[in-house]
Length: 496
Image (cartoon, rainbow, N blue to C red):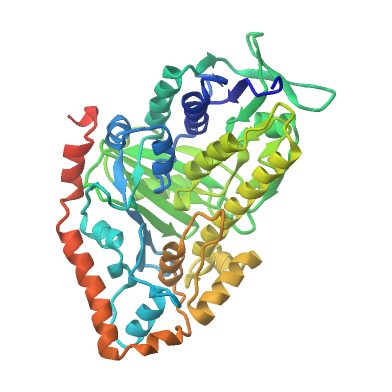
């Protein structure tokens, strides 16, 4: 076929660019030339240091060994996220990875737990999830044949460097320079080439836009359009700073709500990643900086920097012969660490959908439809955290509590409150256990449970719940301290 894609050009580096380069060069590099354009003069955002368990799938494809990746990026294990002050000030809950309890053909575990909880037979729902208990006790081990319900805290800059090495080993070419012009084919509107500031011209068949919020190709050149979601996700700013470690590592991310947003704490082997996400309508940059610096521990390793963003999505992630990946495609916000997941989904889905140079409309439309469904489901999950709250102590939280939400989310909330049902659809990231933990953690409690639960006597129900709980306790108790495990399994060279 003369119209096969032969040249893939990636505009921009960072996590998005090098994930794309590593995947294309290692998995398709025998047939496709990969060129990545990156400028040392343009800093990457590089603050997203927390991931979710789906990263295992990407690493499996590239045959990346977990311990090698972790040692190279100062990574630690992540079993979930601790949400503090979200439901109400001085109240917290954990959204852990993994499965909860044991279901039956007619009803999920939450139905049995709900009746038990109402009758004083059940404890916190997290006690029935191994990862939830392990995160609270600081326990972890990567054991053969176990479910990989863990993620990572990692240094984004080192991760990009790690992937760059893989990319270049498999033939990807890095070109240093800034893009001064995007050249279009006037007959069909496709991108023909990119002109660099030094006059060099880079030709390609398929262009991947990893130029960040600017969207140099997808937006500035192709005018794709952007759908603004700030009426549902009002935070539009973040301040990030790194500090020295002062406490023992915990196997979870901390998300601490404040009057106009929230603060993150992400523990790496060699330092702590800190940041404050806020809405500029209710807090100035200086107020946010002061609040962040008042609530960090350890000496600063760099100066705080402010990042501005607009939550939402491109109207098309794939337009003409250009695919936007990472921040160029849109941004939800970092609350549930979904950015790297969306990058890998875009990369893998693009490789699965790889068309000819004609960019067949059916292929492009299918890609855009699937990415749209996925990002909308993630959006709804994030909005849930803000909207379902008992906080009314600030103008920001009063707005979030009273704002109109997407119908798709309202339908989920109504279904859960009325019948305790949760579900996971196709092209959806978060499973039933995630929805359960956040809904209950934020204060939603169902009115009814499924009648099949009443087939059990109170004694049988108590035995059922206690057996699950005690089995999990024994299993978690046998695990090593997760800091000790890191020392033996993936200790970085910097910490040796």
